[in-house]
Image 1 (tube, rainbow, N blue to C red):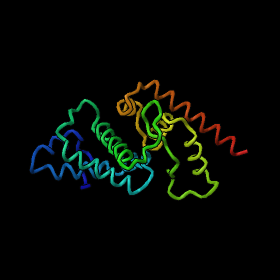
Image 2 (tube, rainbow, N blue to C red; image 1 turned 90 degrees about the vertical axis):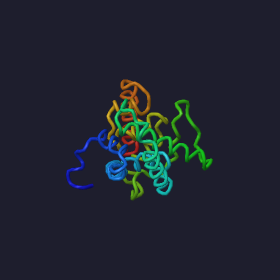
Image 3 (tube, rainbow, N blue to C red; image 1 turned 90 degrees about the horizontal axis):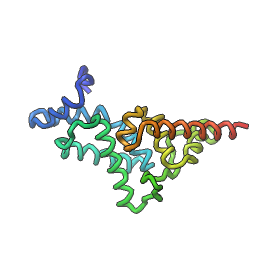
Image 4 (tube, rainbow, N blue to C red; image 1 turned 180 degrees about the vertical axis):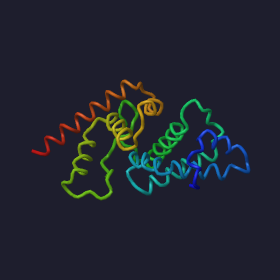
Length: 186
C-alpha cells in the first residue's frame, strides 16, 4: 500500500470503484488492506491453503464485480467477510466435502492446523485440540474473536446473532478451553 493510503476510508474507496479511472487503484487498495484477514478467515473454514487461497481470490473477484451492491448498512469489512464466508461454504459444497452442518448452519471444524508449525505436545497443539472439542458455534465465535480480533458488534452483524449471545458463547468457549488445558497439564 502506498504511504498515506491506509487512512483512506473504505466507503471512499468503494465510491471510487464506481469511477472507471479510479476503480483499479481503489480495488487494489482494498485487496491490500484485507487480503490477509480474509485468507485467515476462510482458512478456518476450508483448512487447506490452496482452497483458502482460491476462496480469497473468489471473494475479491466478487468485490470487483459486485462492489455497487454494497449499501453501507454494515461496515464494509463485515460485508466482505460475509462474501468470503459464502465463497468458502460454496466451495465446500461444490467439492462434496461439506462437513455435517450443525443446527446453527455453521460448518464443522475438522481439525486442520490453525498453527502452521506446532510441535507435538506444544501449547499451540493443545490449544488447537481444545478448540476442536468445542461445539460448532462456540468454535466459530472463539476463532473469529480470538484469532481475527472481531468486535462483538462485527460478529453480531456477520453471524446475525445478538451481542449478548455471542459474549456468552465466547465466555463458555474460553471456560471449556481453560478446563481442557488445565486438565491436560496435570
